[in-house]
Length: 243
Image (cartoon, rainbow, N blue to C red; front, side, top):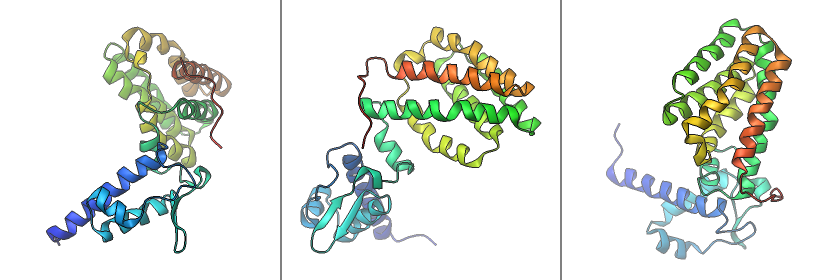
């Protein structure tokens, strides 16, 4: 059944509130502990009705960003309370203009997760999934001269390793942060020369997984993500992590 135009419009307006207000919070324009403007001010600012505004605030509260109290207004919650793996929160946080601290967080996450995923993939009894890593590697070689296609092939290669790991939680974490990884990819990694330099280590990972050499797979993947971490942090000061 088709929604009435006013229902569709209301939904679009509350989604706009969610994305604009959510981005302000995550990017630091509204800091944790701050009471957001009054309902009247927000209605005027976003040019929406009260119901759309309240629905937007409700959605952001569900993501852990806001809490409402009758006597104290609506306040931005501490970062520790945010749903950091929520796709919207990730999208707002990790943009090409992401802070140095956020870039470091994501780079460190790769170092923590990907070598272990490669080891698990090499230990997996799922021969087809391990062979899929080799097929994904072939796509990397085939796209080395096309930077945009190489990015897609690289994402697919790394995802194939998480699939082959057989660990659904690892795969879930990879999938929700993969968009963030694309958003902060350093500009110089779009060069053909840089891409080709990374291929030998990727090949070692793929071959080691197919042959079941788990230590070699883990070590080579660690080399890859450590280099990627260095690339991501070029020119980034050593900033302490968020509390």
